[in-house]
Image (cartoon, rainbow, N blue to C red; front, side):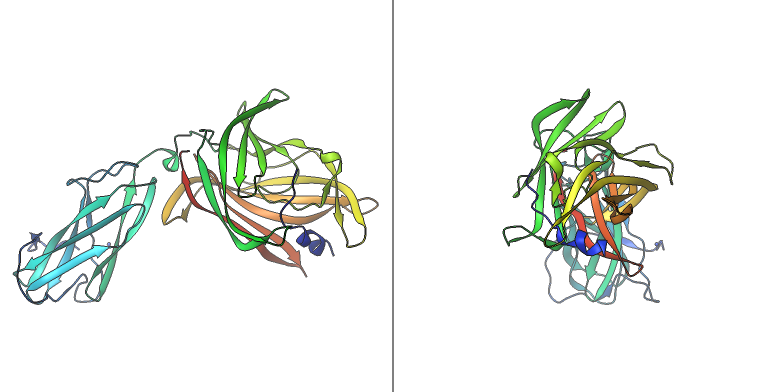
Length: 353
């Protein structure tokens, strides 16, 4: 197994009002001058927008997809109200307003939702800004998978890394992708699917068998290797996630023999993982969307040097979203009694899951 990622930190860690008089407008007529108006009321507060239509992933928006926006015009003229593009969608309307006072503008929806979840849009008109949300339908955060391990061949997730990782060849890596391949293997009656990373071409094996989420590999972190040496390139099978576990539930992996260099020699010992469920059914924001049904757990790397004490070398808080898998991983080290974040991995895009 190639072990291309950080080794150095292991050694370090060891030592919303309704306006009944409003008129709905949506003009595309000509005129001169620019209308002056605002999205906010007399107190500067934003007023609620009314979202219409159904929003489904990978389905083009139609005339039934629009948002009613409350506006107060203080002069007549041309106007343009619009949003930024979020999750492959945007809303806009422009025309010539011929009245003053409160009005309702219908912003037409354009584009195609890329993922399920709740997207927050910012409205722009003149110097005023307000917001509204659109929830896109689709099971399991936009994935066809019904659990926390998608296995659709050629489906992929792209991750960002902060800070970028230093490779053994001296290069760096701040973004990579993991793709579900068509390769499977069986071990102890468990069917494993091969996930391959690019551009580093690491091979990772994951399985869901009899309700258990299993990994076949080394006792480190998802997609991040730490130990300098795994004796005899040994691997272990371990449960890396429990879908119905209670908060506070813990379990451990088997141990195997590993080593880390101290500069001149390799310190050998027994390495294993301890898992603790921190939260169930969480919601978190990634890619400008709300992901739900997230399980967050703590993964501790334990290492016991020969003739030494068993200790937590590093630990990570990892979040898994239903239908997606891992969406975030934060790795910490304990320095002078303080938890120090040393690496964050986070989802930057996905497709075909």
